[in-house]
Length: 628
Image 1 (cartoon, rainbow, N blue to C red):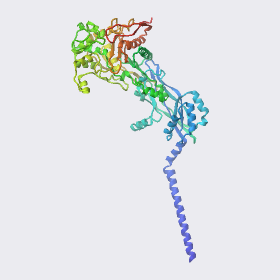
Image 2 (spheres, rainbow, N blue to C red; image 1 turned 90 degrees about the vertical axis):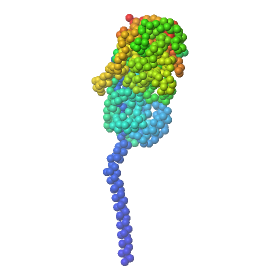
Image 3 (cartoon, helix red, strand yellow; image 1 turned 30 degrees about the vertical axis):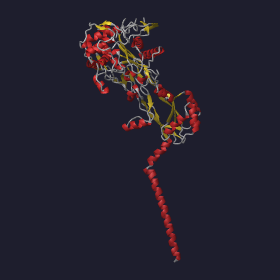
Image 4 (tube, rainbow, N blue to C red; image 1 turned 135 degrees about the vertical axis):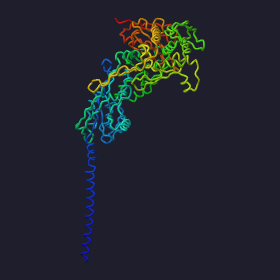
């Protein structure tokens, strides 16, 4: 009986052990089934992710051409140095060695690695690496596991700072931007490493210029070192665009601005910057656009340094701003065109009427800038000599409401519509504006100020170019444009842009002829720009101007078109804190016109003018002779 009980107890123990072992195998089998069958795809992808790396291949951006087919912005091949993330920390000695080869701070490289070590994409460490550095790294590749060197298209601006605000610059998409872009558009082709346009035309036409990135799948070893290429997806380059810019005229404009600012500063005039634009008055096409100071967009393509960024970001003269479209300034005496047109069209004055300038207006003690008195003046003489007292009286007769009405006819107070980001609308002085902003009444003296382009009126240089184009072409307001064509991938035209008429000036031809005559006499002997254009072989119509500036020295304006009888070009120049317009902005316009008409510059001749308005003083005059 004891034996039977023993056998039964022994059998029970084996049963329990059997059941336990069976249960363990069932759990292991279920887990294996879950891992292999249910989650097999996930873990296979994880394993492949540890073995394979997808390396993005950046697509070349489209080329920007000038109006004659010259390359303004393009791309060139450049070496990039990247490191494959392995999920492990990179040894400090390896980072130090790489930093020494690249001449970069080790801390900067370590930060890039730390910020991206959890990803699978290669971490770009340096761009546009010189060949000697590439060779050195290749020779020591055994000391740098996971380092890869690739050739990528690098955005390249062959003229460096030229038209930098117009062209813009590019930069790699950040993780934060990429997350936002994917949230807005889950199907976006933008991915890690994609180069985006950041400003100017690069940004405005980014969807056109940016191609489709490709990639290559690499097999890597345990250290992250590439072993072989498994698969490749080719890139698709971006589309090209053609601009209305003339590269030779752009170069001449840049040089004219640079030389003039240097001369003004040598004379003790601060001249903090400038904005220059040249238009075809018959189409609205932009022929040249300069904003000074400028920046070098190649810095951003190559990977801008902290020192370079601080230099640009701390520049009080704002090199990133395109002052042609975003700078807002009092128009000064060029606004007398508006006041004059209103007075003549409303018959508040006749061309022959003589108004006496005693040096001050008889109703309000407002004077000419230098206290001069020009005596009896008719309209033509008053415009040619830019007499303030005469136009104070025009403001008195016309009234602020009509001044505003005619300013709007010319497109002031609203954007021109040029297809560029950042255009400002300016402002028109009015009782409504003063009441809204300052909660104050309007006074007659402020109408006087508005009549000569002061008070609360603000304009951009591009608005002044559109205004003068209407004077030159007979009254048609065109929308200025800078891109004339967008190509398909095969180079055929996808879209062509041309003149776009926005309106017609509701002013009779005989009135505009009187204004044009006065502007022609501005550049003739005795006019406020007579000395500047002495001997110039092309007939030029223009207007000097000096705009009061509450934050420093006055701004200098000069606006002009030529030839007078058959206009082909309008040029507007504004020199910030350049003082008198004739002496600061006038020479810039003259040199641009000389380049446009192939006029040869003769030697510099010292001289000065003894005119009677704040806008008619110049420190030097160049005699220009026709190129035979």
